[in-house]
Length: 399
Figure (cartoon, rainbow, N blue to C red):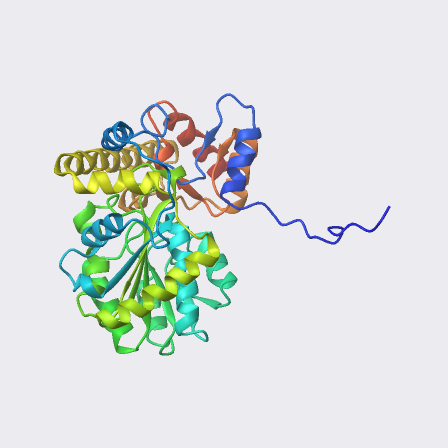
């Protein structure tokens, strides 16, 4: 038998998030609970099809045409609608490049490759901790990735450490910031803190890249756009990745966008040409259906209003689950303060579980959380929250 081409191929570890779902799916325990992946589930534990999306899709089906290629940079009406929603009147939209991307991850990838074109020797700074894929994405694009403090030893935002590090980052480096609903900690910056960060970033000549995957889940669409619009308002360079995966519950449709704020229409044209080339050699053309549905929701005032209401209901339910979880843990683990769960925003809570506790929670009780202790609050409901709280309390005492 001849030597196999793949004999020396290394088997890589499973993805820390999606691999957890694989393990969950293989677990046949009846009462198992998946708190790993970031997917919103309703009170019945189901991923919802939003009514606004359903209506948009029904209208699309009624006038369905052939499935032709989408332009390299995506549907123009989708891109325009996203730019208007994200930036409003914070900047001159004629200077903003917005291209349809394959979800938030695809937008980050396009942005990383574009930054490699303009500042190939820059370092990229991400929060400690950050979404696991951030480091992998920018490392794969050829960047050295460093971290700035974010989550303190006391379980709170280390703003002093963050600022101290920003003030030392060399000019030209890239700072990746979470626009809202920080993943994984759920700890968000105040508007005053954002202003301090923006002042330092601009004064030091750093390039801000705002990851906006959860817009609408903290305080609402307008409030959650504050950080993006703050940076955009001074006209300086800015990268923004955006996703409808969570806010429109379009996970499998991969509906995202990358926006880049340039200094002029001429710069915009040049940057767009570069991003289109990156997209062309990466996937050639984005998918059509989900973006068309999203654009339809944004374009129709009635559907847009309905979306605001449905997104608001998701946000309220998550906050309710935070409140309930904190209350139940306070009763089962007396003497410990769980109010931090309530203060966090978005789908996730940094539960302060240690890695041994998270492993025990998974292996003994079939409650799946990341080893970091991150749990998806959006996966909790009235049917499983008592069991989850009981199990978390047990592992806090046992491990």
